[in-house]
Image (cartoon, rainbow, N blue to C red; front, side, top):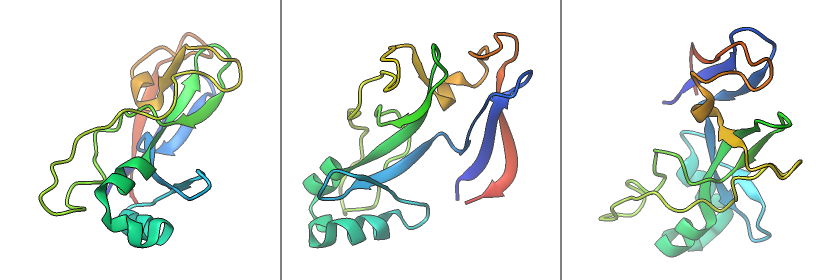
Length: 146
């Protein structure tokens, strides 16, 4: 089970989403990204894709990971599929398939101000706070698991 962490600045009030930095999703027929929560990921994919969930090509095309992102210029927080998760939803999903990371579906760009100066939550850990420029973004282990 994944551990739930908190992410925040050591000096100011900047906080980032709790969790582990990203969220697995499946796209419905309209292209809306539906979060799939651990440990039910495979069940959620089958609920959305139905019989097509047994086809590897469809599963690969319609699933991904949204990373928790922050624009370093305007501080807007958003989710984007940048293809950066180290975990694969395909491992063990279909027999004899060797998982591999896939290309992200979104640009590394702030949807609010269009800046390319965007980092994922995990990239920000240990880095200078983009808000106060004094503190460090810390990953705090809560001891909770999902």
